[in-house]
Length: 336
Image 1 (cartoon, rainbow, N blue to C red):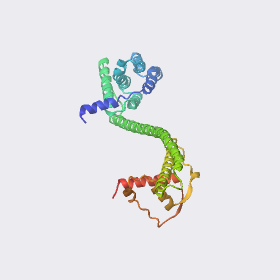
Image 2 (cartoon, one colour):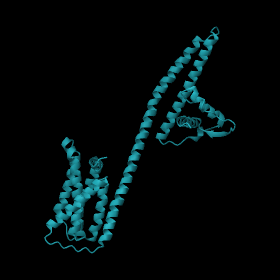
Image 3 (tube, rainbow, N blue to C red):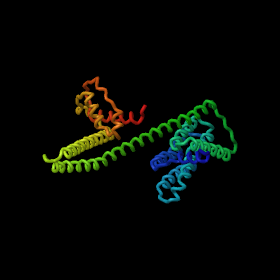
Image 4 (cartoon, helix red, strand yellow):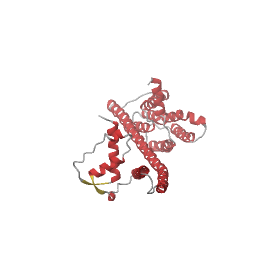
């Protein structure tokens, strides 16, 4: 993959925006900045607070919610750019600026780590995460330098130790976010497969019912042509037809049973062991071999049943037959 393609992929993954994410982001940010302005200025009496910056963050957050709900093609096209601008401004820019303005106050050191975790939650790609974080931090430092007449920072904390915690927070937060996202994708795929299996199972009932109905019609018509004066050859042909109809009915019955099994699994219904019965292993295994749809006689002759050791066991006949079907299928697909 070329570097440009990889960057585009990162931008696409890092801008997976849903109305749900935007809504909760706005509900967190819009009142949050006003609330924390009042709390930090009058409650904790921080050395520096700025209402215009806090209020602008609230307006930016609210406008993001308005923009994401607009049906305009232009709004949809440029919203990802505005979304990243909002994240950069509201999180790393303001938090870094307030951290510097308050001379690395202990409370703002905690908030800086909190900001990293929030940013990770909204930017699910490591490259876009680092881009937003880097741009916001640099912009916060630049704003601090431009708006502070006399820069006098006197940090009284262990800078290497704090940076270690900050870097570890970024790495750990992203790894947790990535694993949760992969788990969610896997669950969504599993749900989609379950829904698809259920849909296919429902749809297969109709053609099976049609086949069963036509077999019933054939069975009603076959005896009309069978009488005592018919040549033995004709009787053998009719007997063969009866046998094939019987096999078709068995196949339809098995198909209906497997549909019921699939639907029970989709609905996460536990296996009903009350329907289990005792059966001889050789007999039920031979029955499964006889019912398997071999493609040719030569293929069927490859399967040999050793009936020297027979025993009784309690099973669901349908489940056991389909287990044998799968074993035969795999054995024929991967010959020695």
